[in-house]
Length: 494
Image (cartoon, helix red, strand yellow):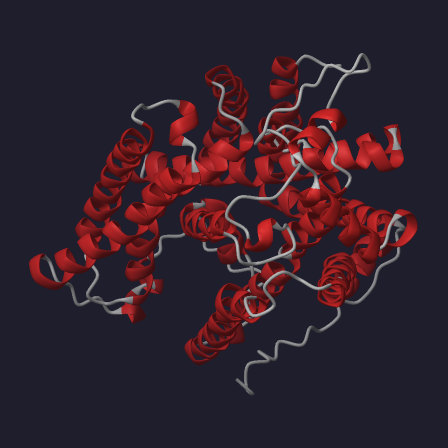
């Protein structure tokens, strides 16, 4: 196949070309197309595992056989044709799972799962709060669309880890495919299962899915980084009078440089021996310390800007220190392997998010308290060009914005509590899942996956039907009168 170092630069160049040419609009259009393809592959894999090839009962029985296998049976299963075994306990999914209820995969009572869940929450809080692409997309959208879109997008996104893990993830373990823990950490479970089920076609589908995800994310990050450099560095400190053309020129240069940097970084991480799973767990240690300070700056009028910077960097230093000490205490040495254990990663993630919150609160409360008037925020934003196209008077109405804020706050908290607290707690009494309970779980994952695919694919087309029709009419040389859009905010019943 292709040399991985060449691929590391091939993918960024695909991102560079259309992102530099089309900017944020190209990113939005490409993201929609890529997401539709990703969900198409997702529902294909769900269908193959639980409808066409196997069933929930079959997978359940296979998983029971997996944990019932003895060491000798595992050694015989994972062996070469000449009978020589390559099985090593802990490297392959064979036998009972340490830390799980009844040693089973069919349970929510898992110490490893609990630690990973906390790490996942901290890390993903960081990616949302610290990632400029999320802020940029929200700012670029109409207020009403941003409020509904992010909530609906989060619900649809959850189908990817939930449905894929329930289908391809459990299938790899149920079928006891020869996938090592290291290979699983590198993200090779989906292609292995897809290849087992569909042969080369399955490999092609997962490769397409992966390429779509990487290119879509890479495009969004390229635009985000270029905007930060162009607006917050170039215009702020180098050329305060820069016009749109100069900012666009700087943005395109940054997109090219950042695209090449992504390729170099991926090669460097592979050189260090850091796989995808390791980097994912480590993510919260690096960016988790910025979450609470950013939250406070956006919602608390007493929040100190200077304190936020101190808290973010202070939390980062404490997190890395605690992370290194944790590895030394637990294993007696500091290596990539010992730094990557769940317990050590958990300590680093929790120190990052908790310490920064405490530092910022203390600094803002007792050292540098502020009294910021959020009503002045809009007037302090400097536009390059006075372009408010796409925004109606209602979109700029403070009462409507306040209603949108209340709407998303209530529903956001409800969804968070349901997914993070209530759902896991409701699964605890089940202990080890019965066959009927597992069937319900699978049915829910299938419904969630198909529902998300339908919404994410067809809702944007329905909402933009008037604009799409106008574009096609223009391409065909047919003039059409612009359709008056309904600007009703839709938050009156909040």
